[in-house]
Image (cartoon, rainbow, N blue to C red; front, side, top):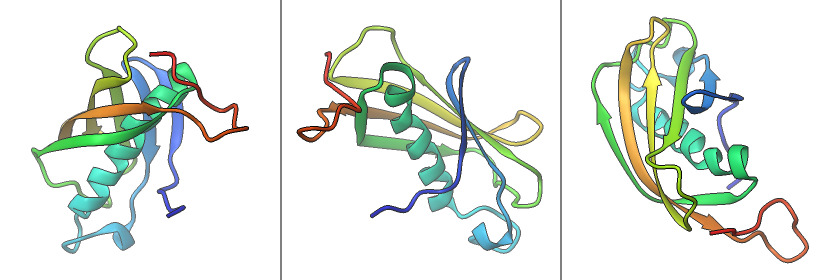
Length: 130
């Protein structure tokens, strides 16, 4: 597909952090972030965790979301956090994530199973160690 939101990434506690600043163009209902985009932001961050920490690609097997609060599009940068449920490296890993408002309030929480995948032949960007 080739499309993904422009996110700024950093490896920091609790695991991987991304930042995204929405605009009105990202609204579902006027003034509020589209729920599907909130899911995409979390999915992108949670899937990228394995590459950022282990240099291994992963894909989403399941993703469960809990929308706690509406996310205003004019409230500043959003912070997405992703971390592993446990430290053991396995082929399928449970990942937790959350989307935080600028004031640190958790607006969306997520859990998912992410499967580590081998890179295509000749692609040294990731190998399966689990």
